[in-house]
Amino acid sequence: MTQRLLVIEDEPTLSRLLSYNLTSEGYKVEVAEHGQTGFDLAMQQEFDLILLDLMLPGLNGFEIMSKLREEGVKTPIIILTAKNAEEEVVEGLKSGADDYITKPFGVAELLARVAAVLRRSGGQEDREPAPVQQEAQITLGPLTVFPEKYEVTLNGESIVLRPKEFEVLLYLARKPGVVMTRDDLMNAVWGFDYIGGQRTVDVHVSSLRKKLELDPGSVHIDSIRGVGYKLVVNKKKTVHH
Image 1 (cartoon, rainbow, N blue to C red):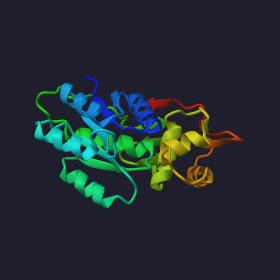
Image 2 (cartoon, helix red, strand yellow):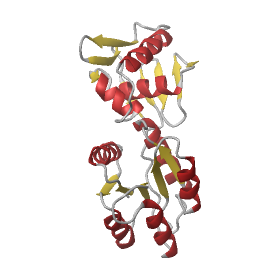
Image 3 (cartoon, rainbow, N blue to C red):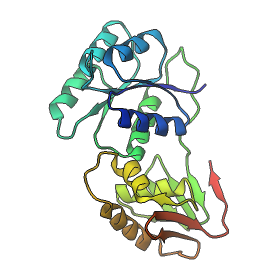
């Protein structure tokens, strides 16, 4: 049974980004861009998780959470908060949120938090057990990536990566041989509204390359001038478990 997610977010670019990435991950997604509309949907339909912006037209996120909890709706909620908004986070958690994610955020962080909250709430008696949405590992020849553990091994040896290096590698590993633009990587890893330049991507890819040099003949990252990067696997089969 496919897990159903409700996204309540009034910023069109972000709501599209969330819907696209969550749908690509195998979830069924409904989007509401107005607070009242989102509240009505949450009351009328069964969802496994709600992603809720706090600053919304109509009802704001705090009002939506309070009303849902008052009505006995126990659907897990992840709130989307602005950077340096500690008070919002505290108030949100007190109002009934299960977790929060701070803007700007990368796709890997978003998917990891969604999966974690769904796992924690997965024991609901009135729901069928949901299938595992995230792959347990991605194997590219001698390279193995574990998305949920943030771990990577090369020829069985663990490689220590910083979080953003890992997220860059994961994004490339999900589509080996496909050129990913710097914008693709920037949006997926740092978030669509990240204010840093594309040089950030280049620096992380450069660092990542050095750590993959133990076996460059099997797995390496190619630069496509003026476009972006692709992960190249030589004569090896990609395996998703």
